[in-house]
Amino acid sequence: MEKNGCAGICCKGCGRMDAPLNTFDWLACVPGNEEYTDIVEVQFKNTRKGYYRNSNNIPLQKGDIVAVEANPGHDIGKVTMTGRLVLLQLKKTRLTPESEFKRIYRKARPVDMEKYEEAKAREHDTMIRSRQISKDLNLDMKIGDVEYQGDGQKAIFYYIADNRVDFRQLIKVLADVFKIKIEMKQIGARQEAGRIGGIGPCGRELCCATFTTNFVSVSTSAARYQDISLNPQKLAGQCAKLKCCLNYEVDAYVEASRYLPPRDLELETKDSAYYFFKCDIMRGEVTYSTDKHIPANLVTISTRRARTVIEMNKRGERPEALQADGMQEQKRPVDLLEQENINRFDSASKGGKRRRSRGGNGNRPEQKKNNNGNNRREKGKNGAPKNDKPE
Image 1: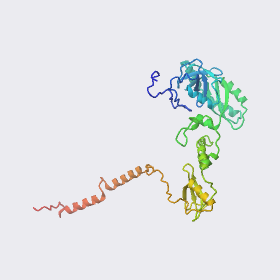
Image 2: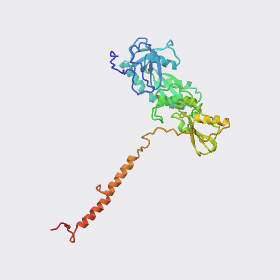
Image 3: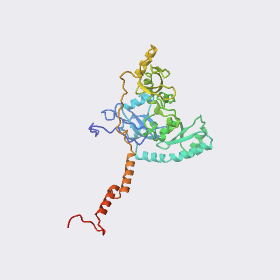
Image 4: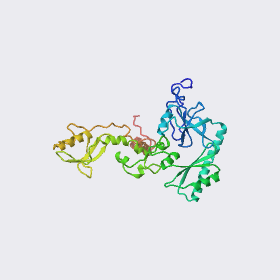
């Protein structure tokens, strides 16, 4: 640990949060981690990543800029992961260490970085020009981004289209105009949102721009299982599709909902019949009402108690009340900040201004009045102060 200049916690696994899909290599400080495998994860523009073999045994760490093999020429990327965690990432992409990987040539030189910067400076103008060309060819597609290779010999055009597009003529025109090799790559709405980036309604960066690489289809049934209102404006993300986070907790809700009593059953007591009104799946509580359509005489009980009452009704028995004898409502933890209101600062400031305006120099009106009265009583007939002391 001290050989690498690390005292306690090693910082080799950290990286700047200036790129999408940033990862923390928590095994980077383990001795011999780099020698565990010669496969390295390299990230390019936005969310494009690739795996390359370090056949030349170059000492690499996270954050190093390297020149890797490409077809044709070479490309420039940043090392994002080395060692054992790379093998775990390969499982997500269904690759094995025995697969064929392109090589890492060397660490980037100043000459390589100059070519790389020149190629990146051409991307925006190329995207605007290519959009105009596709519009002239009447192609039903949208070119969302252009990525030049590190040596400037090739460019990847990312496009979005609802239907199949015949872009053979487009490739010929683009090759003649820009004098480079053209590669067309279709992406979806979620991938485009990940490449653009942004902040979600939760206040954090978009999941597709931080860690999500495999996009799974999301259906409205995930919202139904979690008792979320089916409001399209709230369920849709910035990509105009259903939010990916709807799938995060749906398995836990499905498992917890198995212990809920059937919603179509009514619970009968000696007083009246109760109908299902709402439930809290995670807390395991069910609320019943004496009316089917409106909330009336709401009673909240646990799922265990609801099942007990259902079993009693099946045997022809009716309990005295829906809640068990001696059963008290479970107290929820009190949030001390819940009672505080940030508007209290505004009201206090307004009240302070009002008091200052009424009292002048801070004196109360009653006090001022008393002072004036005392002054009048102390004056004599000629307006001079009256002297009460005997001469």
